[in-house]
Length: 458
Image 1: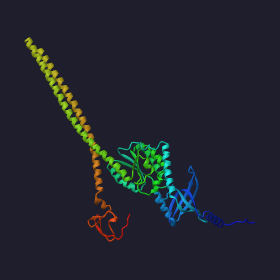
Image 2 (image 1 turned 30 degrees about the vertical axis):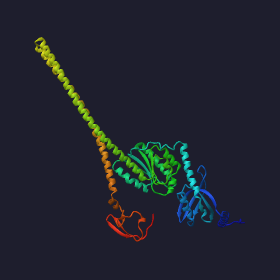
Image 3 (image 1 turned 135 degrees about the vertical axis):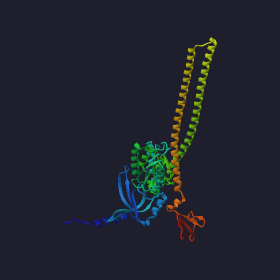
């Protein structure tokens, strides 16, 4: 005898009606965003973890496009779009579909909860670092005073990396500084882990290649990526990294935990590479100044040595002359006293005089040779130092010439840029013109006359 039964769809419709009746007004619930996407509607994957990050529950959520205003309101209040890793407080009603299963229809979001959760996350990271005495480990490292070799971690196609390399490639082309690039995502669920993995790789290479520091740059991208950089493992790695870390995340008004713990912080990648370039220039100028001072001191030392050598020579000659005069006086005195002198005595006296003259001559020659050797040694050392400083100065001059040529207005127009004039006046902002105005658009080879139909503020 067949047992009484009902179809699956009948049961699910009954459950659907029961769920709809029980949660008709929706409920406020907290969850963490695991993943978010947009295609006509906003689709969220929500998850709940325990204190050990073990998954307790998971569900799909949806914000229909007709209710998209709550997303804009949330972003305006928090400064961040909905993104993975965020904790949110939402009003949602469960909806069961016979085919697509259970989903949560989200009708409201409380941004104040998320702002508090974001600050709490930062405070927890700060406490973790300070409790372990890691907070100021990278901050306390001596900041680089010279740049010869740097490691750079950045997204492969980031606009900020392009701005950075405009200057970095010129420095490398002139042999002033070498850069090694390590790509990593700065946005997404695995961004922090990718950055840490590259840091480990750089630390291993540092044993043989020796880097002066590590550069972390992002540049561009939305604020969600900034939030994802507030990551405990990444912050710990930055604090404990044995090389000074310089960060240029790319947002002047916003900051992340990395800005607080890195050795040097810059608002943008362009400002970071400008600091590196200016340091190299200042060092080259200091080297040139030192070379000039060394050259002056060397010339002064050579002059003093020549003067001392000449003085010593005159003293030797004068001393030898006095000894000869004394010997001659003794002989004459002896001859006057005895009235005569044997030829043997005279011969011995002459031999003694000759020997004395030879000794003084040899001493004078040795003194001159020592002085000449000292002069040659000083001259060679000065010439070597001067040559090294001159070569570095020449490379610096080439860098300045290259920078000046790249900033030439003709070169800029040649890359597809243009400037706009209204009569004799340059147009710098859209607010300076109105519909109906006649404008002249100037290109590298000629100009275009256009009439303003409509203006749009950026």
